[in-house]
Structures are given as structure tokens and as C-alpha cells.
Length: 59
Image 1 (cartoon, rainbow, N blue to C red):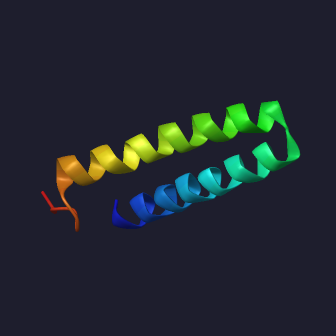
Image 2: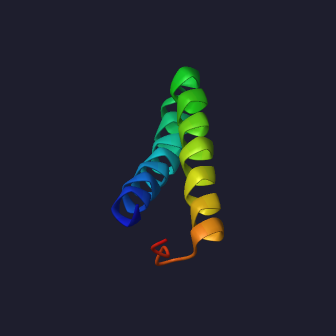
């Protein structure tokens, strides 16, 4: 679970970076999908850290 959480956090960070690129290029569809990706993956990472702690507890 630890490595999966790190990968999901990287996806959320890259989505936030992509939001700024999409705004610069005025690409509305990319803004929508980047916002959704950042929100979903970011929420999953935050709730996993709050629920299991970091580093995650085993059993």
C-alpha cells in the first residue's frame, strides 16, 4: 500500500501541474479532466494517510 500511495500522490501532483498548463493553453477539456484527476487521486491519498497513518500500519 505504501508504494501505491506514493504513485497516486505523484499522479495528483502531475495533474495539478497539468491544470496550469491547460489554463495557459486555454484547453477547457484538459482543465476539467485534470481537476477531476487531482481531486480524486488527491482525496484518496489524503484519506489513506489519515486512516492508516504514514508509514501505513501492517495489520
